[in-house]
Image 1 (tube, helix red, strand yellow):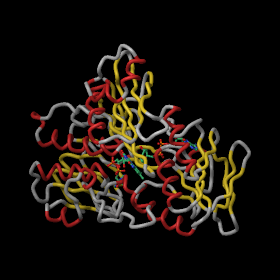
Image 2 (image 1 turned 180 degrees about the vertical axis):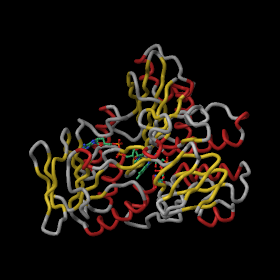
Image 3 (image 1 turned 90 degrees about the horizontal axis):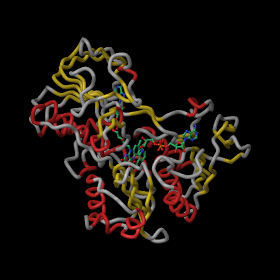
Length: 426
Ligand code: FDA
Ligand code: NAD
């Protein structure tokens, strides 16, 4: 048995939702487009899962955060897909792909063929087992990638009220979940191997500001070590964690955020991979001209830096999706993707944005004991990255614009003195 479509999007996450909207704007006909997703729900804004979804009061729940509300556009509910003649094949995992024959085989045994395939399979959360720790499938150990994980996390938080949570990992998931745990009145201790939180992005000075703020909210930090094993009770629930430095911490629950791996396995040996993702050109087109890749799974040329990158952020998922659809529908009118990397987070009352690249020398500015401060990164005499906490819309826009321009910076001390006004007056 089988069905055939002109366009198939494999994966039903953020990128799939934004691609669907772009297809309808560019005039896809009813019955031409199909989205296949392992998740049982239509595409949604994944960032909500570690923020509004975890709030104790008035939490965000579907359908309120279906794509594309994250960019204040239309909210694409299942009804919207139906009205636009887009086939949503939900709760269905694709178990193999044949790019030569242009077919996908689903776990339910259906063969779906395409003329153009867009791979939007995103990524999966790394498991502690991959680092030699066993037992992370216990009922009170939570990962966070999809709405099923988030629902489980909410249930585990409710049954751990007033108790202790151990958060493994000092990245995005660790930081956002530790804040949510505290807001839910659960004591949170963050454990991570580095000397500071958010080591992939923050400078030590920026990290120290956030850590102090977290400490003021009751979060504790155990740095420079990792989990070596869990302690269990007779029912198989985790009651504590043993750390490699020999210490032990009691736990009513554990949240793990130790990074991701892009879901490329269906295409290994069939498409060119790079930096863990599917290598694409400036049209998001892979080494097979009928196959495109977007979002977390795509490794694409970032013109601004003259090299390929795989980004794991929602803005790049949204924009790469739109760009791929433009390139598919109007190839001759579509230029190369010219993307300025943009990351952000919101925790407690804090909110930051980052543009560009955090390479080279960091120059801090602003009032680190107050509410607005930031940093520029300067490499080979040019400003290439910028970070701002607590900015206004205008300030963030100025920072984005300045970073894209990559202005020449002769004097780092002068840049530090000018601070935000450097970007505002450029
Ligand atoms: P995404 O993961 O969204 O979707 C992939 C889809 O493919 C899933 O539905 C999956 O089930 C499906 N799939 C995979 N393999 C399949 C198969 N074989 N068959 C069928 N379906 C398959 N970023 C940011 O910039 N700011 C933020 O605040 C946050 N916050 C945030 C919170 C949380 C909890 C997470 C997990 C992530 C974020 N992110 C973020 C990152 C952001 O959400 C991420 O970059 C995008 O979701 C990537 O979109 P994609 O569509 O590429 O993958
Ligand atoms: P991450 O890469 O941000 O952080 C992983 C952290 O895990 C590292 O900082 C390190 O401290 C820790 N770590 C690595 N190996 C470990 C080990 N063996 N034991 C213990 N700790 C270890 O990844 P994440 O926090 O898991 O986030 C997952 C994905 O979700 C990322 O793609 C991220 O971009 C995305 N996300 C983004 C946002 C945002 O942009 N605001 C928010 C949430 C999630």
